[in-house]
Image 1 (tube, rainbow, N blue to C red):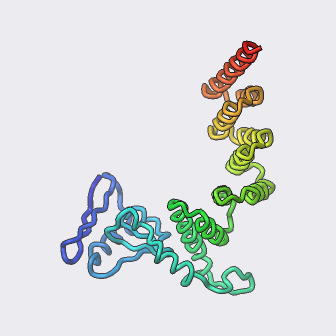
Image 2 (image 1 turned 180 degrees about the vertical axis):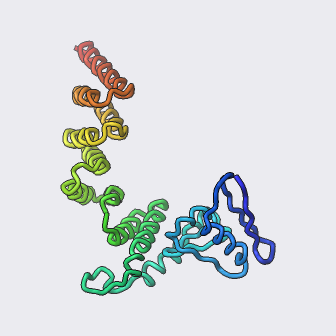
Image 3 (image 1 turned 120 degrees about the vertical axis):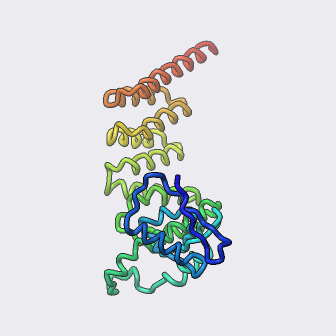
Length: 275
């Protein structure tokens, strides 16, 4: 990788941008580097957090919400949670923002996703630091800013689970499944949750649905194998793997099927030996 130095005005602080060799710079990226070279150490430098080129500056970015600050930051400083919470609870807390009767300009509408991302970022921060109640609170607020919420539902259901709200997690997932019955991730998440709640038959049926939706995705197949093996549901597992093998003749599926057959034989042998 190439390292581009960004030197502060007093020459004491240097930040290096690590760029993959052979990278072609767009005009906007060249302008960004020029801004950094001319202003670092002279004044604070902020960029819109939604700027696609911002990835090039990681990890020299501290996220504060709609904007991110450039500088020499440690890993723990890459989310400025105090500034972020101030922005979320005071700056972005506009009255009427969710009221359909309140006029909103196109500029405000475009900012919605930025506001939503800020709430989700705060949620990620608190989940990383094992503060699940605040992680849930910020995620519930953030999801309101997105029209296409379905991809966010599995994460929200996880947060309900870790906060002891399994019924709410199930209700959320099944509400989404009614609208999108052929969504692979929703079927997997709901199936796994039911199995976690010891409702194995219904849970495995949903995992089976996910396999039919996309036979080439491995996650649902692996979960079916692991769950039927761990819970010694060998007959159910063998039956499912036989069905799956009809639409996915991969070596993994064949191995899972043979393993479950072997486990069943061992179980029967042990049962007969104990009589």
